[in-house]
Length: 358
Ligand code: 5AD
Ligand code: SF4
View 1 (cartoon, rainbow, N blue to C red):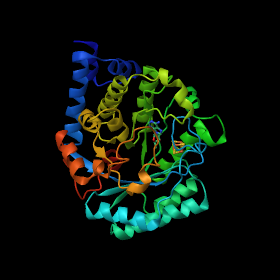
View 2: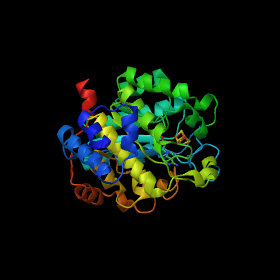
View 3: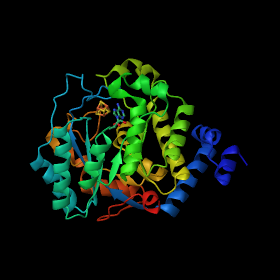
View 4: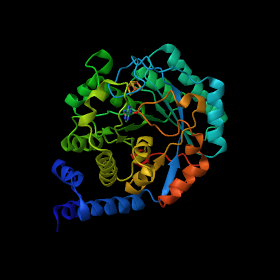
């Protein structure tokens, strides 16, 4: 038995085991993906749940060093999608039976912003006749705000830790009040306490990031007992601080490989959680989203943001679907999911089984 086959047979995923799995290659690497596919089949099946994604606003008061829409990037034209257009996108998701909606935005903390999300949530309830699952991804907020949004109908929340290593976190963010590692941890606790299906995730292939960091990220997610995960490769953006370290970014192939392994390992460690196949995967490699589904992901988030705004929501360079709305059309998403050997679970919310069981 190789050490990888022993780890997979014993199912004890401690730090050393996870590092070994992340470093696996050749036949050992195949064993990892076979195991992840088996576990996914047993606990999730081949259904993929969709979430119609609306990128509500690229306004943000933060300055994350990796992100194209950070506050101090003056090249970005700022937009906020108006309520009528949001309602069109909600209607599209409802009419097409996607089952769930994700509202994503830059981070804003104000009464006005809190209210505007409440209004959107009430539109979702009305238009979706209470049948749509709702995920928010609107950054760190107070416990009170999280509570208000929960009461208004949000059921899930995604807040990526980005990196669970504090030192690396501060290489990715300014070290100040607005970007405080402990506050981010606190926000994740608030979300759990408010009763959300709680999701987090990290970027993979960052400058300065080690295999050990990635192993710790996976253990972090297990310790937190998360319900959902969205993680994907880091992609450079020319108008960001981190761009000066682009030579320290691993090659595309390595980032793809590590991202797939992270998904596969998380699937075998946390068998029944929801794991997203991210757009960033697709950006790095053609067919990236299928690959993520095969590795263990079970969620796809087709972009339903009105076309004219998409270009301005460039978190990283070469984001797909920016020019072609067709990229995320129902047909092409369906075909992509079929290529991965999966089927779309239309009309289902697709709540995290991990959450439901708890
Ligand atoms: N590359 C990959 N992912 C990024 N994000 C932001 N900028 C980048 C980038 N350059 C991710 C972050 C954030 C999410 C909304 O997008 O993880 O949480
Ligand atoms: Fe704002 Fe999110 Fe980008 Fe950070 S990652 S700058 S919080 S949009």
